[in-house]
Image 1 (tube, helix red, strand yellow):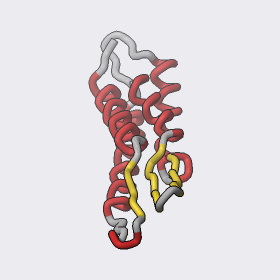
Image 2: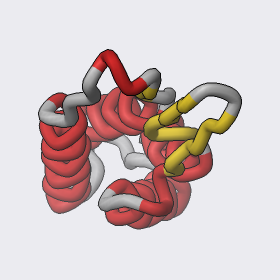
Image 3: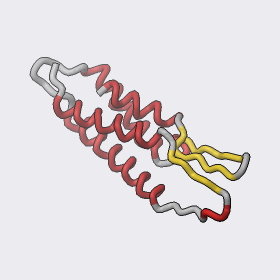
Image 4: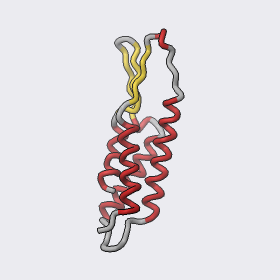
Length: 120
């Protein structure tokens, strides 16, 4: 859970999209979008992972799986928003998806799986 939640937090500071028009480009970062909520959930999950550390025969708190599931939903909804963006080819503007969405999505998935399965 610690690795997944750390990935969720780091994704706030990586580009979510980059739009380029000629020599001008603008990157949108995770903290400028709804991904901020996933980052906050990642911070809470990191605290849970560091404080609880799992005990013998007991899993992490079940609400940790709920938080990670909500973060997965946020990432999926942002991906659907970006998939609906269209840019006319004749304008010379291009858009690329950055590393924030895949990183936060993978981190959320790792945290979700860890909160359900890891026992220490």
